[in-house]
Image 1: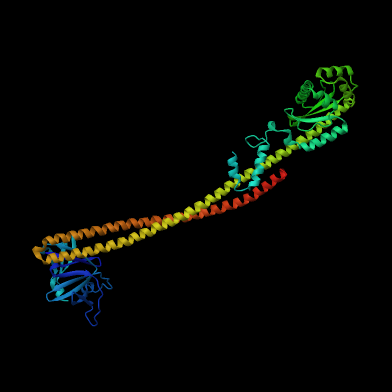
Image 2: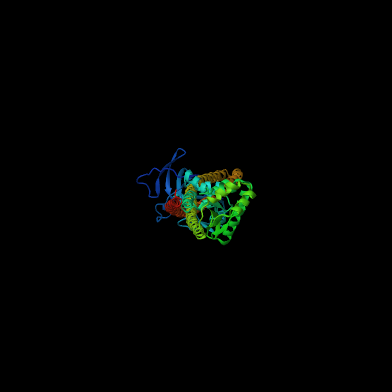
Length: 129
Length: 373
């Protein structure tokens, strides 16, 4: 399978490329009042209005004021959303069995690629948003 | 040599002054080191001939003794004073007589030159003559010849014989010799001594004056040369300062250019970033197409590699341009220090030049005073 890797601060994350619709540079975000705190606002993408997720905030409350440069537009079933990230890294080909689920409750998975440990965001984790 | 002098003097002195110096140059011969060459001195260089003539004329009338001054070659430089009719109208009137006189004068002159003292002798015709050397130091520049007197009554027979030998009228010759003043030898010696003392006092004074004027002239010339050299130095130091200014400006231009290059590199980097995004999107599209997209996936990877290379190259160039800017900054610093130094030098040279101008003016004044100009 192929994965898309990206950076939040200096940390490497990955997700299944099958979930990715497209990637793009950051664009102006329209804030939404009374939304979940990791939802930064809305953007318009190819005629659809999508929520933008503060990925750091979603994964770890301690990271604040991260300056995002890129958006990863995800296709989760019927729903599309944008993950705001610092940098898109690469597209890698991995074995599916390389993904290790280390904490079943929180669905935390990692991938070991060339002795780099990458946090893998699963479909289930993303669906919770 | 003259052209060099012209070039050296024209910036400082006006043309008139130059002409005076040129005149001086032709009038008195000098050694190559600018010192006076006593062996080349002429009597007219050290003695005012007009003054000598006046003195000689009055002296001749006063003491009733004829005299003439000749240069070292025997050529008269004064008009004869109170020459006797015996000499002018008779003895010198024939070639034989004139030649005998010349031999006689030469002999007297040589003796005076040898002893460097007045020499009293009897001429070929039997008159008492003297020769007194005119000296500069121990060097003879001319001779005062005089006499044409008798210390005892003339021996008529002897004069008649001479008249025949040189081919003049015997009776006229005797008449003429009888008109010649009679005096005693002591008087002639004293008269010769007076002429000798006065003429040599004049020549010594004249020589000292000449040396002084020559020295002051050398001084003025040297100062003019120094002054001219300093002016050149001053002009070239201004050039150095200007060049340094230009250099600084050029260096600043280099810095501006390297900043422009960095701006271009920034856009190359952002193009590389865009290319990477394109490559990644292409990879996503290829993945979505499954097996059919495999070939396209390879192309997408190539695009990403290419964009990465472009970015790395741009960063390397940027490192280099940053190093250029650092070097330029250091160069500018050095250039400013150099500029400061050259400006100080310029100012110092200008100060020296203006001081020198004053000294040169003083030397010129001194020269003018010494040369009565």
